[in-house]
Length: 467
Image (tube, rainbow, N blue to C red; front, side, top):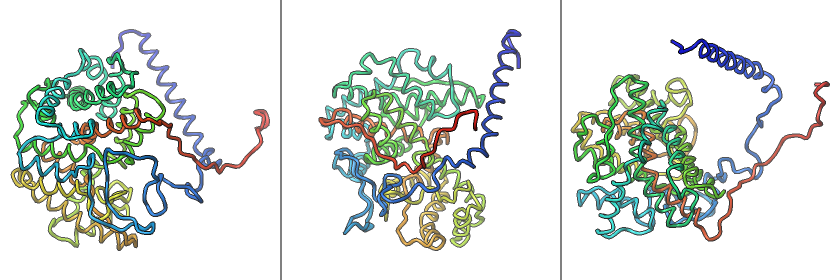
């Protein structure tokens, strides 16, 4: 490493000394912290709804919404009765939206965005104009890519996306204007710009950290959101129509999932405080990044890698079950004891998003010679509930969730793992924006403030000389 001046060298050394002394201080405090027990022995107790959930697993109702409905069970006398999962956007079944797009052989994400933001399905002329506006706004402000992305690249695309969203506040002269009209305008601009930010952030990451060539492509005004993403991502801009249609389908399925999911709730919590659009949306991105939420699709891919390397015969159910058992017992995988892609807070018998992805990814999997890998994932879905039931002694139904198949779909499309959760964020953006508007422009706004039960004992203050 070279330094321009001797002063630069001394500054670096002083900074390194500060880091080392700080780490030493923290490390030396660990035993003291444990002895004084700064963490509660249990986070449960009378009246404590851990994770904002009732003892039967249902969520604590914090508000009402007309945007999305996640339907996975019936309640009878306070008991959950399992049923096949259903998902609705503004009252319209997601299955009907998908089926219509398939029958008409067209892209549907833009129509879905319109439905979520404006509360109704667009006419043909409204949809055409909206598609044009989304394509036009997909281009970033002048020098934004150079200043915000290329000058400060990040290995993690989700963190880069979060910082770019906050930076867009500086480019919006009406950032603090929270009228319905302005919130809608910000929303469809953000939906349009997010895939471009993601594609350019990945280009910078690949160039600066992976030492690959840098190439940036401007989105095209005559392409759908899904087409533009593949066009921007690929060096030669080339993609097949069935690839873009599958990505479009995936984005439709990820566009919204009710107000109670972690990232949407985070968006609504910040919005309820009266903060600006960009702060609220950035918070949602930060929440989605977590491996217990949107980051689970990457964890599924990592888990499947362990399974593929461990199971010799992918058609042997006994061998697959043994592998899943080792994962549950923390002998294999990342050590968490979780089978990623299995189980959901609301869905019981089935996740409609997982079923649709499984169904419509089969054609492309066969075309690209990846059908055996899809068969293995389906075997995991089929066998995991039995392994769970036998090992954990639980009798509640466990179904595959969308993460079990979304990572495989992205792999089919040649999308790098670094981008899996960021694509999820691009697709979920209209849902977040719709919930932001619903919370921000409500007639009776109220700040969201759940309570925490304090269990610490009262102790006297000890003067510093006596400690």
